[in-house]
Image 1 (spheres, rainbow, N blue to C red):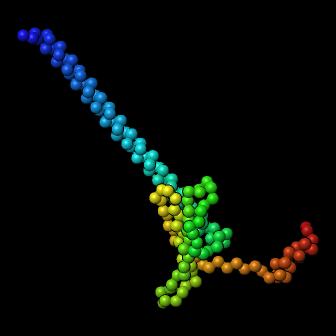
Image 2: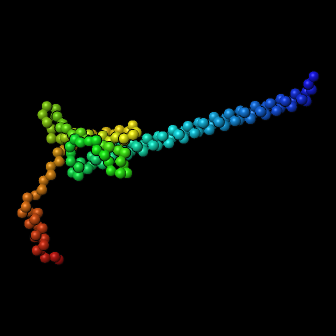
Image 3: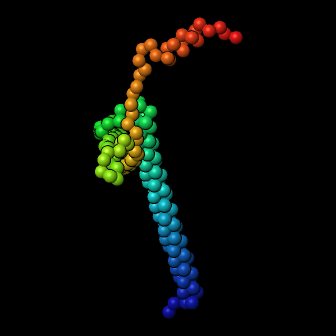
Length: 155
């Protein structure tokens, strides 16, 4: 027969082993939850960063078209200068029909920014008036006013 002292010792060591295994299981479960949360956060930050780059690129191209730095015409896909060389953009320009069926004076400009490797695409559409580059003819009032400034006395 086994004495009660021996049974108490086995029962005590078995409960300690059970507590250690349970604590180890809880630690591994908590570490798994925390690491998966951190991984999801890093992926989300990277996705947000790429979306902001796409938005900024599309806004920049559209602003350059509004200022007349870029021509307002359909083109693309066009590469972007470094450090954003992993991005391409393209523009689609078309007339805007009015409600009666005629053509409006506005142009519909759609800019699409894409990442070459990641699945990130951003589109922005705006209606722009046609850009007309007008240079004043020679001998106009602007040149005459410039000459008058040269000959007028300074106070």
